[in-house]
Amino acid sequence: METAKEINAMCKEVLAGAEWASIVTIDRGAPHLVATWGQYVTVYDDKTLLIPAGGYHRTAINLKSNPEMQLFAVSRKVKRPDGSIGQGCLIYGKGAVQTRGKFAGEIKKKYPWARGALVVKVKKVEIQL
Ligand SMILES: Cc1cc2nc3c(=O)[nH]c(=O)nc-3n(C[C@H](O)[C@H](O)[C@H](O)COP(=O)(O)O)c2cc1C
Image 1 (cartoon, rainbow, N blue to C red):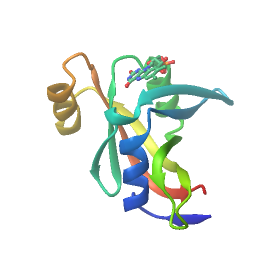
Image 2 (tube, helix red, strand yellow):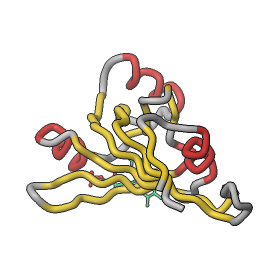
Image 3 (spheres, rainbow, N blue to C red):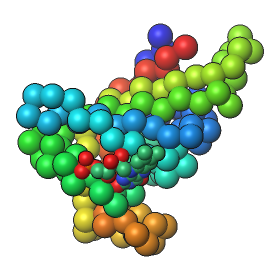
Image 4 (cartoon, rainbow, N blue to C red):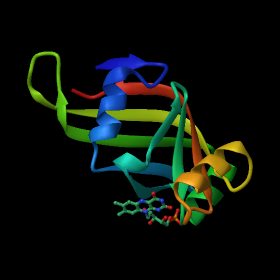
């Protein structure tokens, strides 16, 4: 399994091609799982993802007590180096739902329904296949 410290080209391709992505946080010791559409994930830079937060209320509370989170996206549109089809990208990061500031402003411009941005600071990326 290939790992990297930042969003690499393969992972960008997976995010762009993914129908949806899962996002897991820790809720009082148990996993809490939510989703986003793949195309809603803005790769702001190689260490930062921005996702529109319309809901994510529990997720925001979870991240305040433990910012560790994981995002998993998969796409069958991505070709692997050996020519076979399908790839997954597991992103480990620290997250926060920001309702004010630069990132929230950018996301609200793009998605007027959003109350803010789920900002993910990437720590590790694992290409799955
Ligand atoms: C395919 C899919 C995409 C979703 N995209 C978003 C999204 O981009 N932003 C969002 O706030 N909620 C999105 N949701 C709803 C969340 O998964 C979640 O149920 C809701 O925000 C409540 O989050 P909470 O349990 O952290 O309060 C999506 C749900 C699905 C099934």
